[in-house]
Image (tube, rainbow, N blue to C red; front, side, top):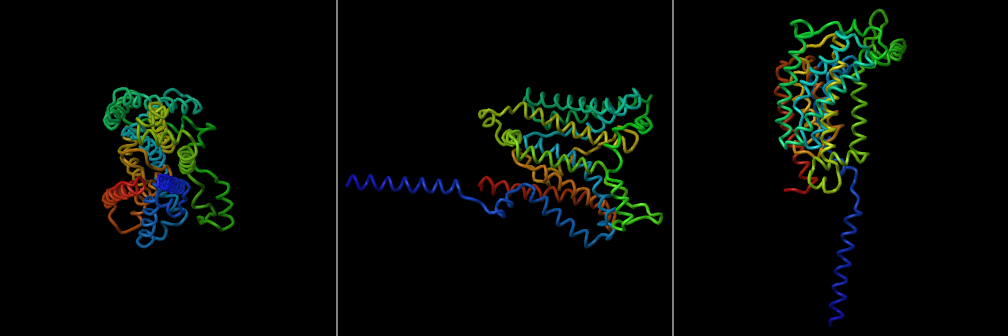
Length: 380
């Protein structure tokens, strides 16, 4: 009897072990994996927005010129949104990135115009200053334990105020510093941050009749704006970091459960501070691009971009609680944003509806992301 009981227990343990093993080696279908991806909501939203404008907008919106028209603001916002998304995945916020655009623009323009430095000095110096401010933000958050929301909200006002005061000092009372284009004219680095790429290719395509031209034969779209190139490259690089490197695992772990990550050997503090620096450098890149394009900088540059970047990141699948998100999702979220901003000008709708649409998209994205999170974690 005892022998039979022992064999029965062994059989139960064996069955349980087999079931556990089966659970561990169980594979999911592509559809099941895709349904759990954070960027799913942004892709679905983009499809809906495209369908909406295909029905309501002038067909010119989806020509090559129209596409470049809405991709340009999407790219500028998207660079900020990708940085914001990575920081949110790491469990923190940065509300100062809009003001950082203005502050970095002031520093960059001062280097180029007032001090007469070449771009090979101005650009690294601007990134260094932005990274230093990001590090200050991160260290204050880590060392004091204050919410990053509060710390970076304070820096939102500090940097905006410094931009205003600095411009008045640099210009003798004006809130705008001009002369950037004249100062950098002929600099070999300028084409990497301003103008269009692949101009030769686009001229050949125009000669072949592939793309639209003006009456004089010049292409209506001379090339791809460099900010779009930066936008795509940063999205790809950030996605690679998040999904294919140990650093990406550290970022997700730091935002998901700080204590568990630290106990597992993850350098949580260093990861978070680095993410603040990366976000600030994304703002500096946008500042450099926009200042060179405009030929000037002003105190209101980047105004409210922090909120738009966070909205694009949330639409792209990043959770406000951290530990979940996607750089590609932020990429699509920014495209949705740019498409709506410019797309409304191709319709008969009042452009003020943009604010309503943006708020609705944010609310739907939060609901959708929350549902996906519960599906992934098994919460009820």
